[in-house]
Length: 140
Image (spheres, rainbow, N blue to C red):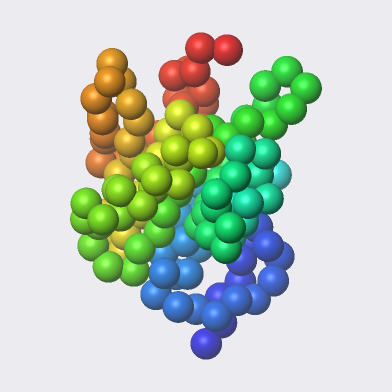
């Protein structure tokens, strides 16, 4: 069975993780105001300017925002077919050690969580905020 990816504009295998990813993408674009043109799926970490040691690793989803003359990572998301756990958090924080996105998202089949660092501690909410709300959290 296949599912259509609106970002990659092609049909992909409908694995449980892919279904979570497509549900998240749909929500981001249709409900939360994330610009489709600023979302990338299955992006190789090594292909990013800060990717360094990410050879062979891929981000499930990355959303950018314009900053002066270039695009910078705003949010990276990790999608899981099962419930979210500390391992998923470690994975997304590990990816972000080189990406440096200010916001991280974990999406599971029946839950979603957005995380960020605040005063040296991990802060989180049990939902994905609107794109404009994340932009308000930036200092530039």
